[in-house]
Image (cartoon, rainbow, N blue to C red; front, side, top):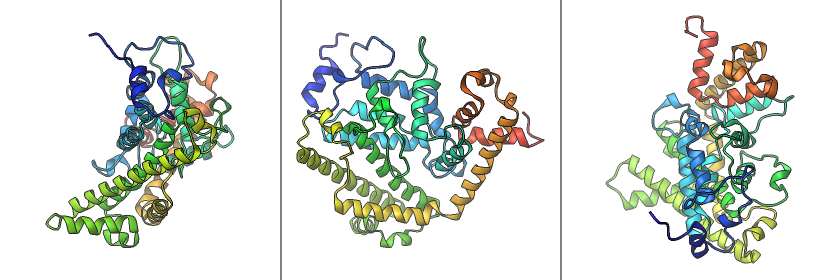
Length: 384
């Protein structure tokens, strides 16, 4: 099959001047010949999808541990939703969809088991050994821990994707950016919309999962404007349908409104800043992807509601406490007897250092694996 139009030519026709063009990529750490008809960012996306860390997201907690039910979000389904929202925004703004998708798919690779509880526990355990932060661990995964290619460790992703991972920033994430990724500059706009897509996704799917789990009651949402106005409108539009349809349609409407508001606000910011290139965006020094003042107010109200009523729900707190004790016990026993680690892991202890090796190993666990490992190590009736 002859490929008549190159990726660069297609991008030149379609992308906005302030988008990130494949031809302007700063490249990879290790020199590789690029593919004849797949762009550099497309290849990055594919490398992320095929790596071990991506597959493990299927059994890592978002809010609910995987065995709580089959329909709750996991890190994997959350990641797919973020990717879908980011692609939609990128296409609407004529940005580089491949780059946004690659960053979105990689943004949570470094999450340990049991969600933000797992991250907090590992950071405490590693306090005297460099700490733990999941964005930086995502970077460690794609730069070092994954082993799929001859001649180098990691996935050898482009600089732009690695920068997007390193600078991923939300309410939960404030990583310290290393010098290599120019901490005083803003990330590209494709990375900025991933940050916002992440927030849109988790706020809305946490409402969905919270209602499905009955940790939230629809009456509790009466005073949350973003929910209530849309919910009332959906009930009037579809009066014969049941709550399940009303709930799903309300969440769809909220996501649509937030995405539409965000895209419009970004265009206003680009015009106000007179940005005419990707470097103009980066030179601003801070993200410009944001909601309008009105939508930000509504979104803040929704986030505060979720903190009070879902993330501090006694069932979530009980699971977090259990997760803390499991991870602390695993770390303690591996530290006291590192020979309990798998032989292929233990073999690298001198090169990596005991504590960081144990941290890497635990961070790579799924919830399921961590629970099984705990039983094998501490339950005398469990086969090892």
